[in-house]
Image (tube, rainbow, N blue to C red; front, side, top):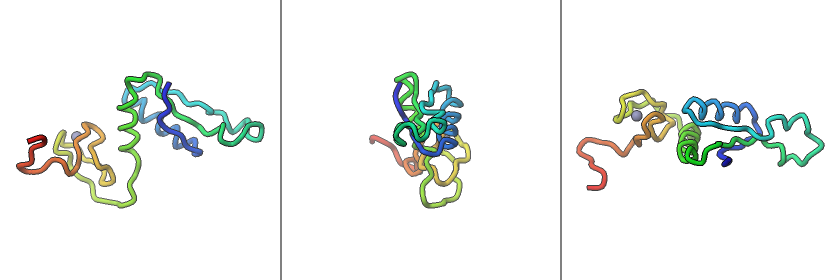
Length: 112
Ligand SMILES: [Zn+2]
């Protein structure tokens, strides 16, 4: 198992788990019941931690989590040039196909 996310806010960890599972990634939350033993173990020991079970899912999981992390600035939604879906403005890349927001433009060719 590889840890990909942790937060004192368990509901946030749960959200991340749901998000990853929706992408077909098997996950596991450790310290899920940490609050019940609060006071008996050091606080750091009970931070809910989200793990992926399969190492091959690690890169994808991190990408998904990174995409989900909101950026301070609030921007208008944009349409992904890769797959055409509507993407929220605070995402730098398409959550669906991974195309970068600014990387694709008229006449622009990567690696040319
Ligand atoms: Zn896309």
